[in-house]
Length: 417
Image (cartoon, rainbow, N blue to C red; front, side, top):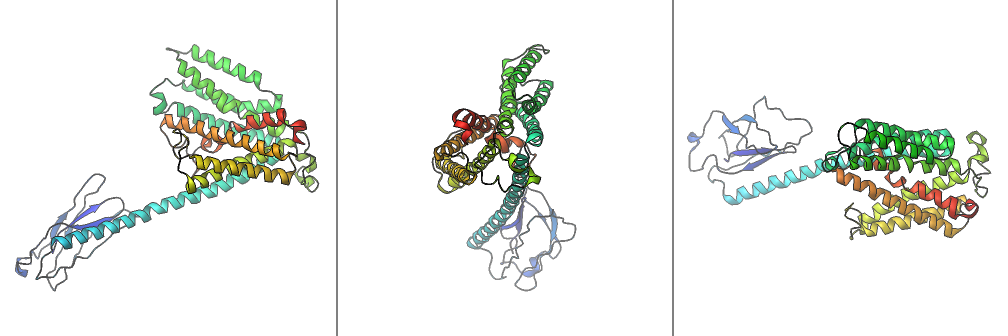
């Protein structure tokens, strides 16, 4: 009968026969009738166990018993094998190799099962929280006004905190000096106030300029030696996390021109605001949000199915095939919603709006990927289960709001009505 060296990793117990414990040339009297101690082979990340192994020579079949006191952690697979040995013949090399191969195959199958379960659970969380976020954001967009602005301000505050934590991470901070914590916290508060000031004043240029001036003065007057890297990261934080999201307030709440051609206007209930709810700002925001979601979805599906050519080294998983699929999906959703909502009235305007939304979402995603790549992290945070942080979800929207607002207000005659 062969001794068993059991490799105990985090997934399975793999019985592997190495040498013969007892040669069949010896008689039954040569077998030890007392308990035999088996010391486990330990490697990196393995645990050592010691237990009794009793071998009964009665019959041609060996019987293994493990005494009490051996505890295994929960959710770990134990692959047990009963070694059978006939007395007349010892184990040969071929039998040992076959047993090792079978044990390895069993461990691989168990490993695949254990890896598949976390992926399924992660996908389930991602779908559930994604649907919850989508429904909540849809209600906030329909509500508009202060509801939309306060929700955006809260998201901006969390996103700004995540941004400055990325700046202070080991990957970025090793090559530069991050701004002091009191500056990053003050900058996060200022960024969250910008959408509210935009709704109240209608313009954000003066508050942004004033905030940039005071942040620069605080950095220049700090103790120690001020660094240009501190100033540049702080100014970019004000622009990226504070100034750019304010254009969504300008688009949703500032363009209050009634969308007279919208088919839903006549049948929209008065309890939900009546006909005055459906403005150009609401319709443009809904189309823009929907086209961004379509771009991400089609790009993911197209990249998985046909992706071969890498798009950029900033995000190695993105491919040209996926980008083209995302562009097509974004344009298709924009045109379909434009036909359904009767805005904009021109098909060419709807196509141009879809193209603009796609490039805004793509480069917003790549910008955040570049920041995370330099920081050496996969996600900007862990606030949303299955999705990461706020910046991981809104990176495609940061630049798109400014592009969409400028397109509707500047290039569409009569705001596309």
